Length: 224
Image 1: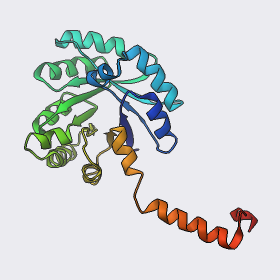
Image 2: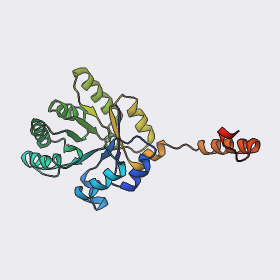
Image 3: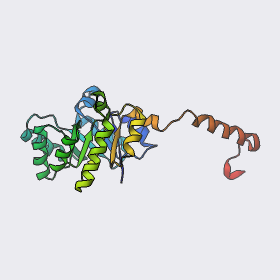
Image 4: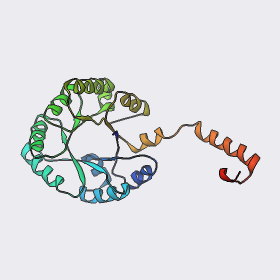
């Protein structure tokens, strides 16, 4: 099943979007939480309430060594939520991923900028990989191509890792990524809202209403 995530700590916005979209969960990172001024123990209850039931949350470790990352991950894993532990895909992060997987912890390898980074994380057992599409573009490379090559490599090697691309600037990037057959994606709230709208929709709906009211007044469809 495809997994749609929102990349935000704003519980109100997430609750509003969840009314219209099949939101599987929420991704966070230290910068998002710092900007919101909310710690993990503040934001997770609010997000869980916003999604009204089962939801998966991605929470990033902030420790500096592999052993400390593991200790932090164990504490996160023990919280009463469906948590995926996010680990930066550095050399130390790869070591931490191996340690976490030995403990049965679900892991997302984040901050992926290259195919080789993602492939090594997958080989270490990462359950999810988060390539940063627009940030890769901003560095002069091709974010879509990185995701395409990484997805192809994972398929060729028969790995179970899911791609969860992140960092989007516009809806076209999202569409290009979805066409690659990724298993999941995380969207900023503004991009998700843009994907649900089109300037031609409301004029069409207004015309439907005018035509209906001209013939049937205030009757509803089943009353006509």
